[in-house]
Image (cartoon, rainbow, N blue to C red; front, side, top):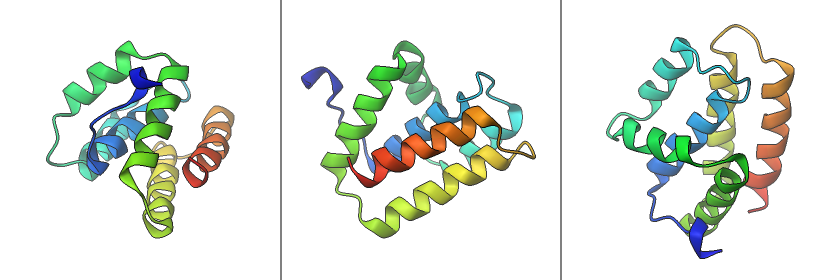
Length: 113
């Protein structure tokens, strides 16, 4: 499990999750990129994106779970994060089936890390 331990801040984790979500339909749109930038202002998104690019889905999910556990999110913070993920999925006008399914899975992971 050590390979999945990160030293991320809450903002870095949020950026990683947002990037992960923007790839749910295998197409990170310009609108999604802009939305992520609007929510994550003071981070090097390229650094986070580079880490995401080298991870497979299993590694991404394990890093998210590990980071959620170590960062001690409270229920209110998790609800805000889920709300922002829904907004991200909606920026292109609709939530497709892949995005909807990822949202369901992430809700499970986020609420039970």
